[in-house]
Length: 151
Image (cartoon, rainbow, N blue to C red; front, side, top):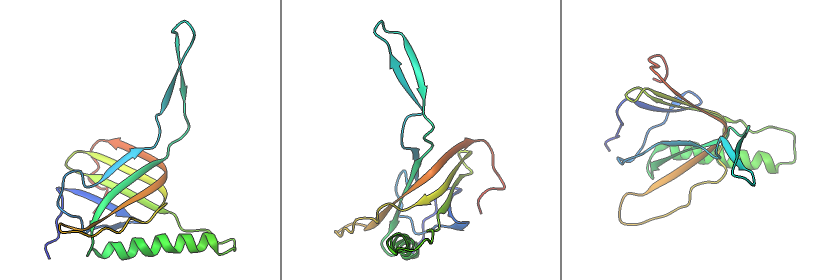
């Protein structure tokens, strides 16, 4: 089976390159969960801005049903839930995620990620994909040239 790559973009989870993407537009998406600033408007129309400390974000990406990374991510999701339900004081291991776009000169760092919900299972006639969403404690998006980042 042909593995599709997309022009000089790496998705890394704990330093390992993820593969098994279906060919499509907007394969990897990363964004903040809330607005950075919230407008507060007074009775006379004057505006002040409240700045939030919420730096959380979500990184989403679809993997083909047959991709090996599905097994890795399902195991991580199930292990973190089992750890949480075990009643002991063991901590789940958070994921560190990086999206390195060498063509568009962007670097996205996702710090301390967790899979909140496993993908829904769906079957049909076309390509079957599992769409993963990883919630991160801090999402940092940087522009510039990062030739030493990624693989």
